[in-house]
Length: 398
Image (spheres, rainbow, N blue to C red):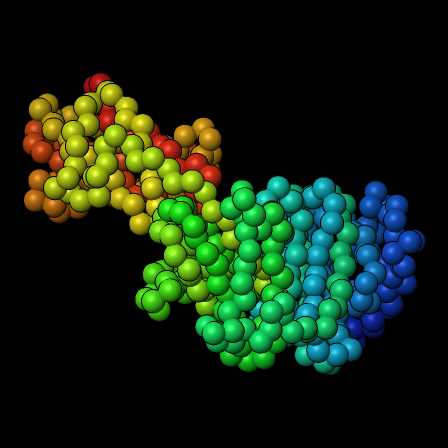
């Protein structure tokens, strides 16, 4: 991300200049929500581009600005009390937002939701601390935008107290296997707070479960007998935890904690999907179970879980340059992050690639002599919307 660089001397005259500029910035940026209704197209003559020149904003007011290519604007906010501070941008520009306390960066975001390129950060604040924000265009994006800070009191979450497994909040899902598309809003309202949830799985399904928001969450999944089935940390978006896995009929319990014991708000989602049928090459989760792949003949495969690994056996009869490619299907798009490893007949890895292909696919170009080789394909993905991919090996003509 490109950043503007500034140098300045803290002389008395320049200090006066900044004080005056800050005064005029406050006058020209501060406006009620109604007054700001049509200001998105206005120029930005007072661009607050330096930290020392950050524009002090009031809670609940929209402030309009314009980003030039490689530009950055600074804002500051001092909460009157503790609570959940939400800072956000609005407009057509793809913005990136960073939050600072002093010189320490304590939060960042570039897309508040899929398909929404505005930014939002939620953070639990303390009274009297000055927080600063840097707004920039993602990859140099330019144009008009708006910025706002709001405050929300820290509430006891729905179903509280749910601090123990016996107090777990029951999550009900509809006949389509979801919460109706709605996220559940929850809060960590004290240091070390723990939230427990429970749900029933009536038949073998794919579970898609996780959190969203600005917190660093960790989740643990237990079955009805108290056995740890799965755990996740930073496996979802940003620092959120997420699970996507095959699950058997049972009653399950989920424990959610904040890694750094921070207070604040998070969002919980859960969804079930019908299991994906294994491809015709399964079970190929081990090297010894690998099926042959022919040069020049693509294989269409899919993953049945986050821990699924596919192996293929490659026989080389002619020395040369070979291209091994694993590419997600058109439906999977860029949601399937593939990695490919190449191993010799003794199981020693001799080459590896991750993201060398298109749309997070994997691409290996290697010189091979006649012999037996094995290809290992793995993937990471947040959801099971589409996990199909193709695997092919071609010989490059000299």
